[in-house]
Length: 603
Image (cartoon, rainbow, N blue to C red; front, side, top):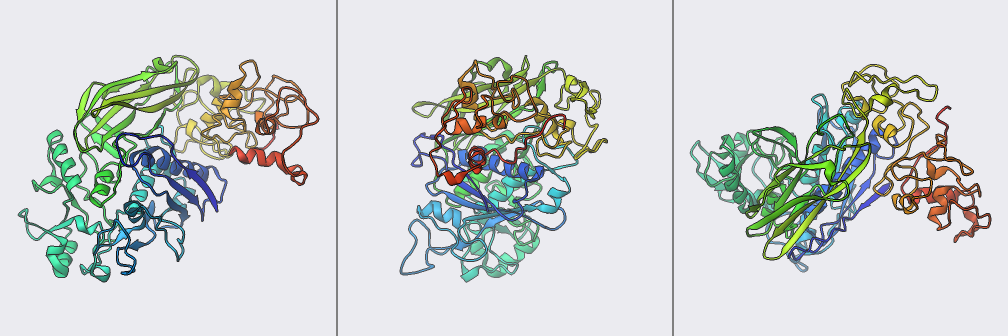
């Protein structure tokens, strides 16, 4: 079992009873043991969805545990997700669960947050978890998923991030328990069905599921005429109808949206496909009058969760918390824009007073839309579009600050990050220079005039994916990242593994590489030096080199607080001597740098 803890420690002290964002822990189990590139990228997307999208928007007191798997699912089924078990107040009448309403089923994640108790499954395949998500291993192996979040998904791929957001939504509590005959387990609906209504005829005569009874529910489930009537969704629906022209989903003035019948195997608890403007629950692909774009948010899932009783929301949330831009060339006026979604979950009007970009590289980023002062009603959202124009080669970072006033002046920040590269004529994420230069005696397979000239694992023909996003040598690092961070994209033994604290993936933390400006190391270049005071790149990630020649590699010395620039042949390691040669490996694992191999660019 591989465990990754993703606890966002951004203080959301906006007057909420929940001072922190909800914590989520993802355990990567069956299918995720592989160290293949696509599996690692899929894990990264799940981590991104949890830490950058869900945690900032949901408040909560109980840390939620998610079991993630890769399974052989049916054809064209991207994933599945749901609560691992259901509970209700009277599981044990002598010991009721506080905070839960009687007579309804609760998903364990929702029950935990409502009660403040850690209610995990205690038996079965998913014992120890609140939530379970799984994704199609066959589709992943067949390279059908788009595994990036800094560029829109190509038409011939399925966006993995959208699938992850969708399945986590199901796992939180968005699922049905009613069967095809309109029956509930133990005659109790779930928090989902409590918010459903049915319509018997074309007139907008709605009846709650409880009013319909078993036979009435059976009729509307088979007809598919099911509607959501939650109060929070109603507020959003009224606001959206003022902004967007009504469509078939809004054919009743007092109900928000039509639902897919929740008993068919492929549409369990989904919104109806007619409800496409402006957004769908758990469907992050949005569209507006200017065209489509990807907004990394939970969409209408937030109001739906509130309708089902989720007790805490970040009162002013900006998602994602970091905008990562694709490598952009200096000859390009602007990158593809990225979108930040600001949501007001406070029951009252909040004023956005200023939107600005701060930092040394603020000039490399620009606010394209959504930057004017405005007011957000309860459950209102503001979309801020940001562009990236680096101006020069190198790593750029800045902060998007959204200042607001809900009675007290406050702000929320979003990190902006991007890389400037030299001229890139075909806009594939690799500069013309890198696509034409000698690769240390090896033939360069890339073409500066063709966006898609190569594929995966040595393929020399296009595969429908821009060359920068492929992994030609199959080592787990994309071509664009290898060029940017100083590795060789056609040598499978020369690569790094990037983490949030090690940008170039060389095994040395950014803070250590940036601490001494006179030193040889660079947080944005994984191969700047060699052994024995050599300042010439040698094809080995800097963390694995021994710059001062004292027998201990650079990452090891930083880990144990010694100086990798000054030889010390009498290093005292604060651990048992039985660690032996394994200590160096442990130090690398400590920093999350896995599977790095020493190998020359020329080998």
